[in-house]
Image (tube, rainbow, N blue to C red; front, side, top):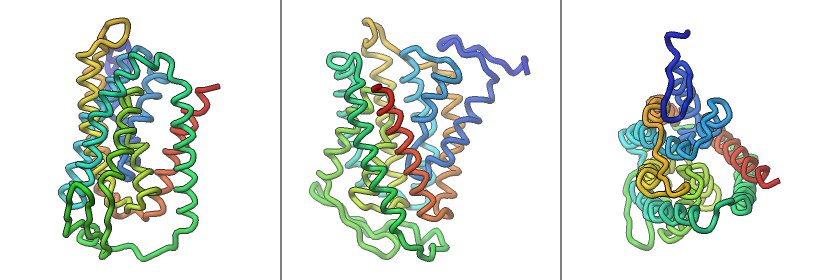
Length: 297
């Protein structure tokens, strides 16, 4: 095993080189089915298990998203399960939000425990709504072919977007997506997360969009948000006037596992019952919510 040990000079982590991609694959395989990269679990793994506690752990987490999420995005796009106007509406909010959040972290929130507590309570409510919906959901026959899961007849304007999915016409307001996405972007910039664990349950519970149709759009937005995060952390001074670039090799290794895990997760998503995917999403929401709430005390 010693021959497989590798020392990562930036983070100081020393582990077998196969561990980061293996961990990332397992996590992202399941979380990507709900449109979430799994970065919210990769971060505590780096901090608590690997002992990577330097500020650059956040940018390394962003780098994991940058390398990993194209796997899921590619698969959803190939199967025509990508609602591009939805992705655009989310990205239009999250990208400027990341920059705003980054400066909030510098100027206003050196110890953002109270704000994290507020976010945790909001997520707790969203998780409760999601769990309530799962309990009420009736079991229906699952479509058998790829074609049943494709989105089609998409029309979009600055006011509203509509598309057909599983024989149902689905519409949503663009401003109703943009404003929460801006808030999620701000939170992402502050805490170094892609934001998928927040925006995905919002789309499913509040906007009532089908989880099969939103996963690809959320992953695409997560990719661009994380790309901006890596850039900001690597170029704009934050911690004591210093930049906090990622541990490039460690982030890439996590990302390689995420790339394959998200591709496989996106491929298998349509074979999973909707209730099971929503249960995965609910578990994710409650984990993130609990983490944000308990850190306050």
